[in-house]
Length: 278
Image (cartoon, rainbow, N blue to C red; front, side, top):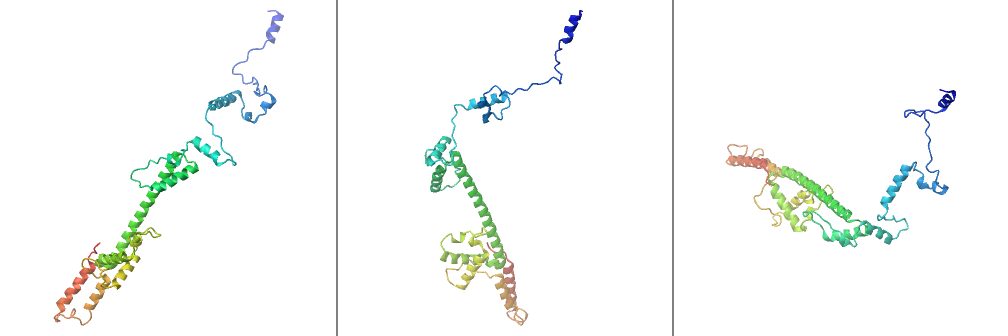
């Protein structure tokens, strides 16, 4: 090989290997070819390469032809908002709302109409209005269930307390109290809910108050209960104490009324411990 060829061979550059990490990478600014005005536009600020620009363009093209709704500003009028509501799907009138509610749910038709008018004024969509009605009805139903549960528990508590105090006279006294209430108050008054969720007519203090009033009215037919008359445990104890006084026939086996006194005391004890009628 001549010296000339050797010189050519030594001056030619070998092709770079694909794995050569020392090869410098040239970074180009894709915005460099744009005019100063376009390059300075804020919309291009976060677009760092051609691919990002292409994605942005494709997304914009997809929006071409779609129905766009301008968001009203703070100076918008009621008509401006009505136009937006109409585009979103609000019915033309309040009558356009349809509420598909379960058949077992009782609905106040007048109240539902008032709600529909207000929903239309607020711009609610049909599914939003229906969702609000369903939510309200479910909430009301849950509240009623809780009230019923509380009332039932209060009624049982009152029954247990009064049965313990009145014994077999329980039903008789409750009937007398109810008769007084019926003669004074309108129907349903005693079903008024108290602050703790119990009914007025289930509160022990209220029942006892009317029962006491009935006893003070004596033989008045208004307060008399049907069925046999019973003594309360306290009244029974008083009767027993009278029969068992020192020197009475109960203690004197030779007294002609001894057997009768013993039987009366025994009957009173049985009555005291007998289960009260509900």
